[in-house]
Length: 381
Image: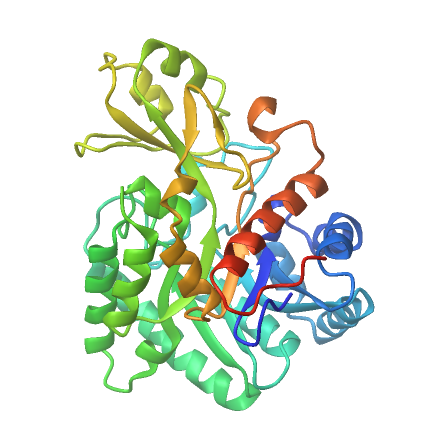
């Protein structure tokens, strides 16, 4: 949905399980339609799609793509972004480190990303922007140079597709804990290196950053400051994803409570304000408690959840300055990205169903954005 002339807002459909095209269509006809009806009854509802590799392959068939476009029109949807981070299964199985594969040294990642952009180029109205978020190069600390060749190929292909389609197309690399790109400094340094390696200028036009506020909080960084630094350095902010991490103080009580968050599906990296880190919650559990130290845990928790001691939320890092930057259109695409309702303990996720959870989160975020603009969003939303 459009919150103003500059800003498309949605939630990320990676909350709905399924990797086949039929799964995507079922989500659109079911919970996505229910969410859209509550949030945007009088205007088309924008989509932050999640299209896994199998569904993306199906949509390379022109007939299936045309039918999918007709379905969006029938349901009063419009597409503006795709979460291209997870390549395969993302629910109901052990995901953890596998979510980063294939990485940007593997041609499968390039081919998949271009398939997503070809889908968007056919769905997005002419003259509009389309974004795809992607893995932060790869998992673990690696030499960034090894990822440059395929990203330069991507930039060249995106320039050609943009010229032929009339849609502005851009990819956002999404920094994440314990990955090749995890901090603002690392992301800016890599993107400047990438831009310097491309005499054509295509990389600067088509490749930038996806700012995930949960991941920013994991680094003990300020999302508004990150936002401004990207702008000051001429870095394209392709998309902003709104979510929060767990914010806790170490104690035996906290450790016991965190056991209920260890779902066995996703990585839950842990960071300490002093720079200490653990790759997942089991690693933290194997170390002595240091009562009172500040820890953040990579577990996406709802934006409208204020915390329940001993567990707190990093949503306090989303300052008025951050919301003002969003409201002013500093990034055209914003989506709420809490995909964990199916695995969170009930006292965090609440007793609501997925539709109610998403609607509650989105309304909370819309209210914050509205407070950052001189043109408040209608109260009916």
